[in-house]
Amino acid sequence: MSRICQLTGKRPISGNNVSHSNRKTKRRFLPNLQKKRFFIPETEQWVTLKVSSHAMRTISKLGLYAYLKKLESKGVDTGVKLSK
Image 1 (cartoon, one colour):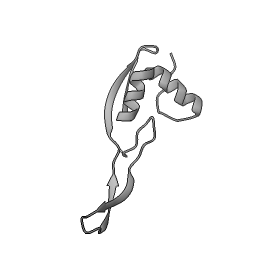
Image 2 (cartoon, one colour):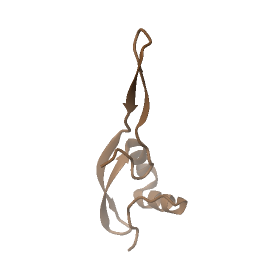
Image 3 (cartoon, rainbow, N blue to C red):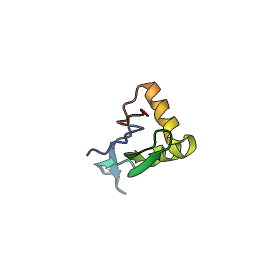
Image 4 (cartoon, one colour):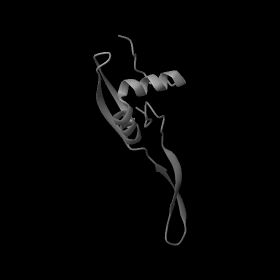
């Protein structure tokens, strides 16, 4: 499984470690991903998603069903079927 958020699309980025003497070595910045199980009351189903902490905050504000509908209207493939 890759380190990509299923909802926001956040993925690792690269940068540099910079030492005190200003030497630079490559490093990776990994997103804060969590594997979380959510219940969608509108469709009465459980879904397991690998989401970033940013996506979890958005889910708590909008609700999972509304957030998935919003992403679906934008054309983002989340891997969740929203059929009743």
